[in-house]
Image (cartoon, rainbow over all chains, first blue to last red):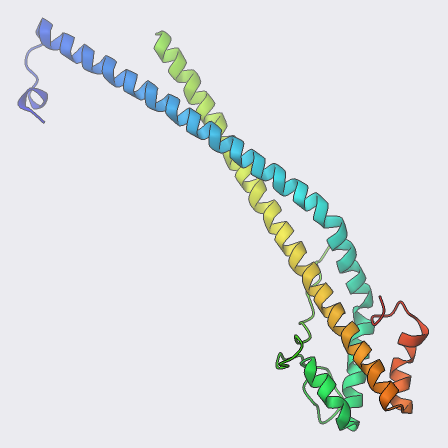
Length: 136
Length: 88
């Protein structure tokens, strides 16, 4: 800052004109920046609108199929679980069946019981954990 | 004076654009999150079903090599009713 800014001199005609010039220049600058901000903000808003629109369409396309799949899973899950438990129990009394169970990540058990699922099979992917079904 | 009016209008436009931007951003976030959750659940459900189906197929193959009452009893619902987990 120079001295004239810190210690304003008595307002002469020349300094008043300078100050007015500076105010006008600042106003122009603020206006230009505001205009630029509006343009940038408008572009961002349009982009966000498009993203929201794409997300809505994607959700509308996926939701019926996914809901159907999840509902079918919820319906069949007890049957599948019971089937796996029966096979696990069968594997306890028939050791020759255990390689098949191990292949699916079902560890051998000494007694029939619930089937813990642990990923340890090298060949096939292990039995995935039971998915959490959505609450309605 | 004219400049002041334009500045006011621009400020209003900017405020509206910011509010709309926030609304659209929130909509995008919630919809994308919902989509990811649904896709994840569907993928997990499908993977579990496929694994059980594959296990059932192997159990059927095993039962053909080693037929006994117990395994046949376990597999009987699958063979009687094709719409069970093993045969979707």
